[in-house]
Image 1 (tube, rainbow, N blue to C red):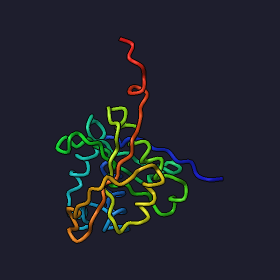
Image 2 (tube, rainbow, N blue to C red):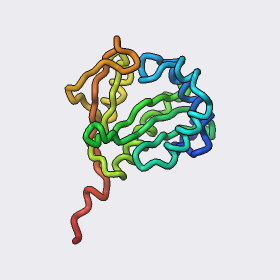
Image 3 (cartoon, helix red, strand yellow):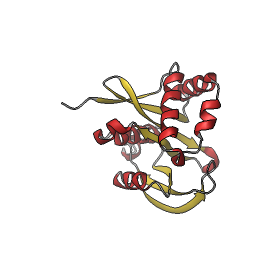
Image 4 (cartoon, one colour):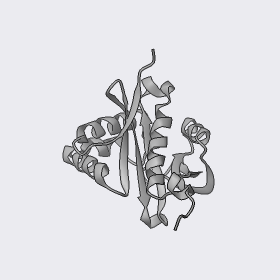
Length: 179
């Protein structure tokens, strides 16, 4: 029997869980994120508490956590970037290696995308490190494609990343106008 997976938005009191998952992701794939492990380890525990509280309640940014049999096993962020013309992004996806084969990444990206669509997004963007071919293939399987935009990663200027986009629909956007 395979373990059950669930995805829930982070709760305000889960700063320690957020820190645990973020540092695990940075240990395993330091090239894939816009933060360094050193920065995360030097950050005060209260900063993770503050982030969890903000992401639990904000209408513009959220973190979703993956659980397997009740244990945290992954996370993804979602936000609307007002500076980038209100583009909606998923970012910082990570799933524990032991449960990757269970499609937890797909559950996380879909939950974050649905939350963004529920908040009006019709396109979901993701910056993916060019050298992270596994992530690139994963996002392509989920319907993301290249926009043609590339940039040096903010935390790792020697690494380039590509902007991907996926078009989404939500029932509100698809409903006929009844007015």
